[in-house]
Length: 140
Length: 140
Image 1 (cartoon, chains in turn brown, green):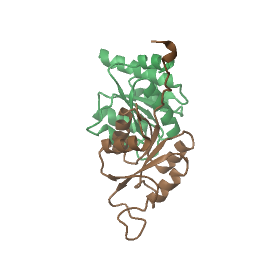
Image 2 (cartoon, helix red, strand yellow; image 1 turned 135 degrees about the horizontal axis):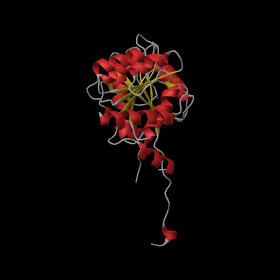
Image 3 (cartoon, one colour; image 1 turned 180 degrees about the vertical axis):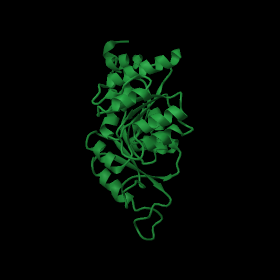
Image 4 (tube, chains in turn orange, red; image 1 turned 30 degrees about the vertical axis):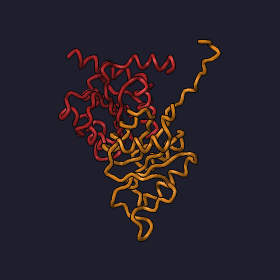
């Protein structure tokens, strides 16, 4: 092979995902599954922690539960976190009992926030959704 | 992978050890958890001693070493967590860290590897302490 014909492809850094979930067991399991799929995963147990992380580290995708403690309106919290980094994708985890924000709607009014996964979910469901959202690992 | 990463990965014990980092300050937790993962450890994170108990009692999770802060909000501090582990998970090693001098004597009676790590600690000191503990456990 001629050295000139070899093209060095740039190495893609694994996308960083912030998992915001107050249930330690759920957060541990889903974070572990995402790491197993090659993502860099950051964990936050509350909205306050998530804000600190988002103000310090660049994150490609936010996976946030709507039922965080201390938050009356999970959708509003998700919007607040989502606005912290403009290019960041968002996936919402919502329990059936989360109150819909829009009267008469079937679920929370998430607008264009991002796709939603219903709790309880399988960690593999979330991994699939994250891969599709980020187009990771991409063609190759 | 960079040369540095290759070297520090090679330092980790084999087979893969699991470390539970218990720290309520998210940015400190993020840094040490990230460093330990770079060193080849599997790492779970807990925001509080209560969360640590949830993870330690989770059937899906097995933890070899708990690295915990002493001062944490909630009904249980790092000492309480260490006592619980000694009583209920005797095979799990504990390393405590604290910013307070007063904690040293109590920690010495609860940690197999001697007095606690004083904050701020170099990340490599945590790895050294884990390696000492796991080597000692293998010899026992």
